[in-house]
Image 1 (cartoon, rainbow, N blue to C red):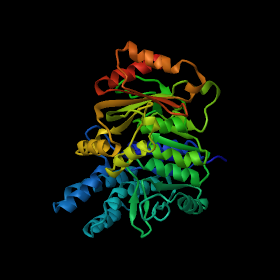
Image 2 (cartoon, rainbow, N blue to C red):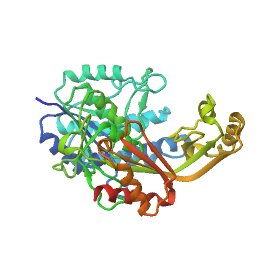
Image 3 (cartoon, rainbow, N blue to C red):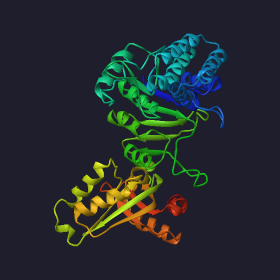
Image 4 (cartoon, helix red, strand yellow):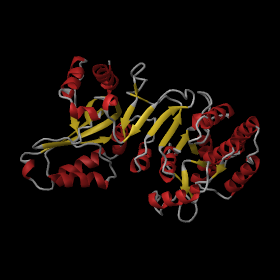
Length: 437
């Protein structure tokens, strides 16, 4: 029998009605044996996510103010779900424990993790599955880095004797037993970790959208869905701004060659998007998706006979490293190269960095260009088709958009262009029209 590990996001467990949908999905296929859940998300546009309330709780405690109202809102939400589902998950007692831990100055990570913990308690009780706490199983080292192999072995042993289980996502424990959370959206990682541990045939990631779209629907009206995509393509799109799946979630599944199916809890019969190591035959597309970010800066360094000077790039990168500046791209020529960085890394540092670059590289000038957007056009099919770059650049030319930078990786999975912030949306629409319509 096949094994499916399924992760349900915050919108899927936002209230009792959504959890009933989750139960219907799980009971509809007995292969769905191991379930990972997020904390309850928004029930409507003006609602607040449970995780945000938990972070607020910590902030109110640290500021010395009253946190009673926030704690009451959290308690009311979970108790309401428990009553509506007609289960006894011990929520009242758990809330008392949380309040006691707050008074003992519980860590922010501990409090933030309680949304997933309580949601998993409720879902496990409602499904009649075992509840398995992630604490002690998902393991981090002293620096907060996930211990992948130790975690895999611990989960494998724990879940081997359980036919069905619900595991809270988003957190694990440090060597001292303290709770450690992933970054926001980290329940996706938890789901992939569990999928690997149980040698799942499929990792289903259930959310409130029917898979991944070719581009941002806020920019392009009704963009086409992506039916199949490789892990590498998804990684590129996630890094450049596509937000359906946490970018780090692909690694445990990719490592174990487990396909991911991104599906919609509210439209369970929709096929969604399949993410796998390879995409073949009729499912192969030239362009998988288009994504990007605004607000980058180009630091352009030009120096005569640069190509004959050993170590100049290393010196430039060392300056940025000293200032904790992360680098996105380094397009270049014979006697020039540009370093592309996000604006947020240069706040209050730009003038100092430019001065140090001039001094240490013996430069007459350094050109700084701000307010630039970066757009990635991603697709494994590009390497097999001639004229893809020409088609992309022609589309931008016809749209009257000036290209500030071109960078194509050696893997030929993506073509990255830089345009003015003001041209960002128009550029994405032009590229989409060229390849998708």
